[in-house]
Image 1: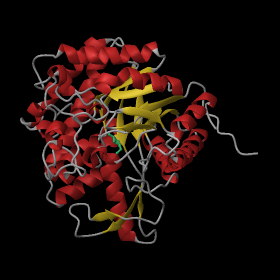
Image 2: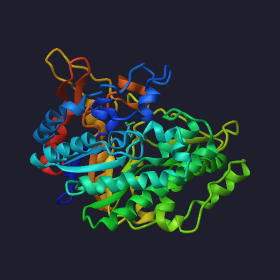
Image 3: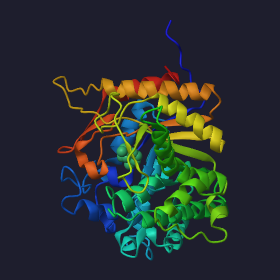
Image 4: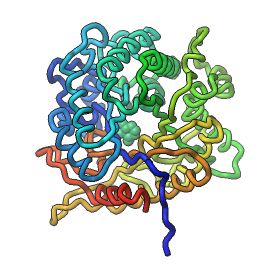
Length: 449
Ligand code: IFM
């Protein structure tokens, strides 16, 4: 008989989304311009020349999406708040229509018996704040404080779980150094400045939350992945893999859980001429306040080869011949187990939620009107087996959210990459649950497989 994979009672089976990727309505009802509006409207930035102007039109269609989520038995719906929908100018006047929209979404979720997990920042910074330096300007800590206070006061009674930031690695290293994401800069020192300011904002959000007296849980979502040496026998590859992992994982996990930046990485970067961020008295205490859960996003593993031509880390991640998804990310489920046990060993979070995992596939509607996506099912199935193994090994994983509920605007890849378990026809906005959606519904029903 096949092995049974039973998950702990009360396991939170969810789906995840993000404001800019699904909402559309980019200037409706007083919303201000965000950095992704600016970035996607700038020719050459988005691979298929699309924008998030309309995306999945969740702004007008949230009731339909939540109804589908209910039919599938989804327990948690993760979405994010668009900062420029609340503060069109970044600071100053609050846009009431923005607040009302998110209240309607949360009320609709509750009416359908679904919990709302809210990400405070998932990459759509008001453009007016970018014009003042964005994440590289420490003043952002005050702007963020004003923003979170409004969210707690106006939405706090309806939110079940708060996530301060989504993937600060992407907002800093990808946005300020590698440049593939907004604002599209190439300055490593500014990226490190952004790291520190993002983490200060995370700490500020936690501090203000505790002061608010609200009782839901609050945590952060970090994207992490294991880095292995490309050649397991090469000392040089092992060193490059270590640096890669220090930048991807420890740079964020260590300050939050251990109250310190990874010394080895900072010493190395300094030697390479990188200007390190100024750390003021009290910063690390603010950043490392106790949080209620560790939110993990993970999709792939890195296999790093030493390459001295690549400044500053001198490594490149290479393909190993494993199968890959439509996002060109290699499928390596073992990485999920290795990562969960690594996080558990190093940081010992009291609770872990996988706030994103999933696969982009080349989906289409077939002649029978169905979307058959066996590769996505296989991907999620294999990764969940590793999650289960980690739970059995003592890692306190309490939830798993599929990325994504529906196909959406995949940042620099535009509408060309489909991650959803629900298919979206962008011309008609018609939703079609894929085979993976029904398969996932079955897992939720049985709390396992
Ligand atoms: O679409 C993104 C999401 O916004 C953040 N995590 C990874 C997903 C897939 O690339």
